[in-house]
Image (cartoon, rainbow, N blue to C red; front, side, top):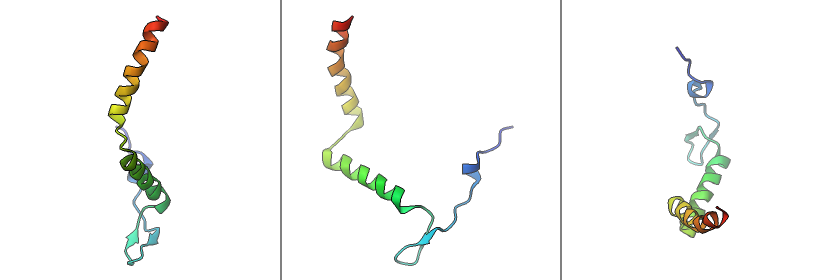
Length: 67
């Protein structure tokens, strides 16, 4: 029988309080970085699936020439 990893069994603890006094259990730096990534995606209209598809199609002629 496998044991759960320590990260899954660790309980959350209050690390700070927000401006409204509510307890916060996450670090703002990581949340802020994720928010900036989401903002950049929204501004640049990046769609990972369509970007991967475009790269795949652009690479096909190069691979055909190399073969």
